[in-house]
Image 1 (cartoon, rainbow, N blue to C red):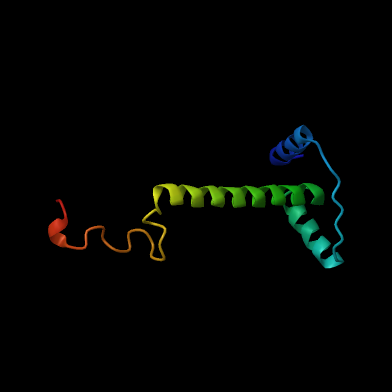
Image 2 (image 1 turned 60 degrees about the vertical axis):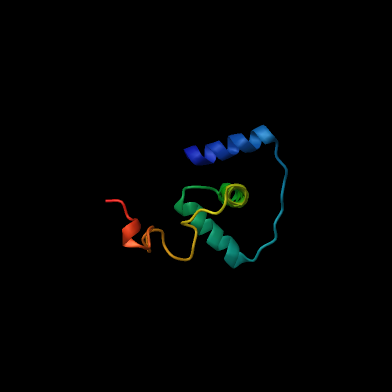
Length: 96
């Protein structure tokens, strides 16, 4: 069991566990087996890790959204990459 997998198992054991039964086609199960095998994990550990990561991502993005609402949006969160336009549009405003 890898360190990451052991961490997930410890977390799940601390929180208690419940059985979740899934019905899926053979092709999807084969893909899950290949992905899990590449990481040296069981299919069960791989699926749990993926679900935990996705749940964290959703909570993280929600927290970022709430922070931006509270403090205002980050100027770099625009369609243009940060630094694409100079901060000072007028060269006379620039301090050198």
